Amino acid sequence: MSLNAESTAFRSALEVIRAVEPRVADAIGAELADQRESLKLIASENYASPATLLAMGNWFSDKYAEGTIGRRFYAGCQNVDTVEALAAEHAKELFGAAHAYVQPHSGIDANLVAFWAILADRVESPALKKAQVRQVNDLTEADWFALRRELGNQRMLGMSLDAGGHLTHGFRPNISGKMFDQRSYGTDPVTGLIDYDKVAEAAREFKPLILVAGYSAYPRKVNFRIMREIADSVGATFMVDMAHFAGLVAGKVFTGDFDPVPHAHIVTTTTHKSLRGPRGGMVLCGPELADQVDRGCPMVLGGPLPHVMAAKAVALAEARWPDFADYAQRIVDNAQALAEGLLRRGAKLVTGGTDNHLVLIDVSGYGLTGRQAEQALLDSGIVTNRNAVPQDPNGAWYTSGIRIGTPALTTRGLGGTEMDTTAELIHTVLSQTKPGSNADGTPSKAKYVLDPALAETVSKQASDLLSGFPLYPAVDLG
Ligand code: DSN
Image (tube, rainbow, N blue to C red; front, top):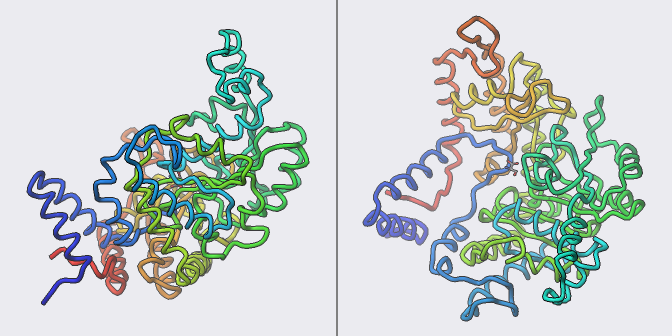
């Protein structure tokens, strides 16, 4: 029997790798086996298509292409230009954006490019203006000193980490928290929802240069029209980090007030989450910021990864197919089915449900920390990650939450019935796990007690559930 193209391609690639370093070939094969076996509920992960994966494994990796199309620092970039232009064209059409920059290597990188572009556009600095118009040699030491002072300490207002914001929106463990003077807006303590009046109040008091919207653990839609009005009312640049929900924007599940692209001055994203592309980032903006954004490399970024840009072009082409809209809608339907299944079984959910791709379980309702719950679920074949909940008493390390998301399982084809079974498995594990103690008898935030037989039974049930939905069905590694 002859093999299909995908199986032939991956088998051949592994054979070539095995001849040099068999342990790498084995690890790649083992990763596929592990992903096939586990119930992957990490809200920021997905499964890219074979075409997207294959577009990354080639000689584009060998090419330097600093700069951008028409402004390269290296010769011989004509083929890189082709894929960079294709990826940007697909992105612009898909999202209705005037400009797309597809070089960022990750979401952090995309945000740094956006921060640079906004600072360069907005900060009143005569020295910076001189530096922009290439009079760098005319700048005195005093100019450079002034430039550094004026660029630093600018104000940013973003969503607080424990309300679901992201590290790169001005928090201390990230450089944004060290460069910017940052304030946060949270969520309403009763509803768990963004209170736009409170955001407006914080903006009026703080007068940020940048207002950031976007999240990695907020299970609801954000009204970007209102956020833009708030930004305009205080003269802030409005930036949206749509990394988590870019697939829902691409698939036209988030439209009108909930589509960030028409409302924000600048939008950043990763390409590997709900958008289902290769691991990387991207920036979308209007013409006024485009020139500064295009200076991302070498201003902020290392040399572009042309092989990943090729894969971005493939994945973005796929996201323009009509079935992607169906996929995006099913992500949300599945998240809602999962939330309903959990609520029906008595779980406590932040905001009481979801209208995007993720659900945040407050596991204090089960008497557990996020750390205990995450490990107990992992023992039972269910891969999730712990996450802070608003005003979390256990902080960002142990946490009180478990974040789950449906982009990956939806790609595998699981639907509402399977989401209910998944809710049952999660509830069974969490309700049967008990907090553990330290050696001296004091309560531990990490240790837990779970009957190994129960964990094994749930693992088997998870694997049975997945067996009807093979991952990469066209890929047979033999
Ligand atoms: N690490 C990503 C997530 O899991 O949400 C965001 O950077």
